Length: 104
Length: 180
Image (cartoon, rainbow over all chains, first blue to last red; front, top):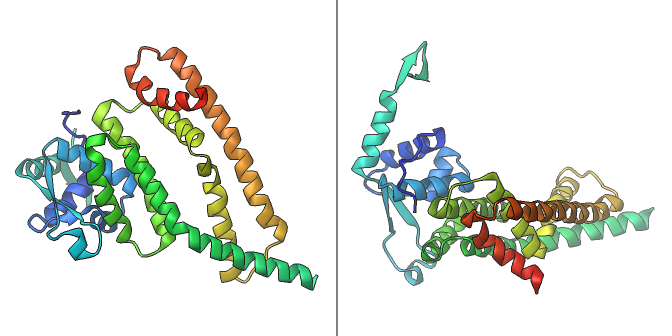
C-alpha cells in the first residue's frame, strides 16, 4: 500500500479544487469528471491516491440501492489536510503578466 | 445496382441495430473486467461506485468509452496499491487483456463499424459494402498481430525481470491460461 505524498499535478489540483468547492455535501466521481473534463482513467486513480494519503474522505450517499433504484454514488469530501495541501500548492504559484507560473 | 444499394441499406440498418443492442452489455462486461482487475478488498466498493458512475451518462457509446477508461483506472489503482507503474507492467497488462479475453479483439471493429454506420445514416453518405466488410477483417488481423507482439514482449520481460515480484503475480495467471 502506498503511503507516499501524492504529486501535485494539474489534474490533481483540478480535482482538489472541485472537492474544495463542494466541501460539505461531497461530490461523486462522475460529477468531478463532468466539471473538470478529466477522464475516468485518470480521475479514479487520483481519487484513490488522495484518499490513501488522507487528503480526502469518501462515503456512500444516503439511501439503499433498492430504495434508490440504482447503485449508490460514492461522495468525496476534502479533509483539512487536503485543503492545507491545496492552499500550500497555490502559494508556490505566482501571477506573472496575467498568467500563473510555478515559482522555483 | 439497385439490389446492391438495397443490400447496403439493410446491412447498415442491421449493423446499427446490432450495435445498439450490444452496447449496454459491452459496457457492463468492461465494467466487470475492470473491477476484477482491482485488489480484492476494493472490488465491492468500486463495483457499485463505477456502476453508478456509468449511469450518470445517458448515451451508450459514452458509457462504453467511460468503461474503457475505468479499465485503465483499475490497472492504475492496482499499481498504486501494490507496486510502482512501469512500462513493462503496461505491456504485460495489455498482453494479458488481449490474450485472455478474445472478444477484446473486436472492440476496434465494433467502434469503427459504429462510426461508419453513423456517417452513413447521419451524413447520408452511402458507403460501399466492401468498406463495412473490410473493417472487422482488418481490425481482427491487426489486433492478433499486436497481441502476438505483446505476448512475445511479455515473455521477454519475464526473462529479464524474473526477480521482479510485481511482475509475476498477474503474469502467471496469464501464462497459466496458455499452459492448459
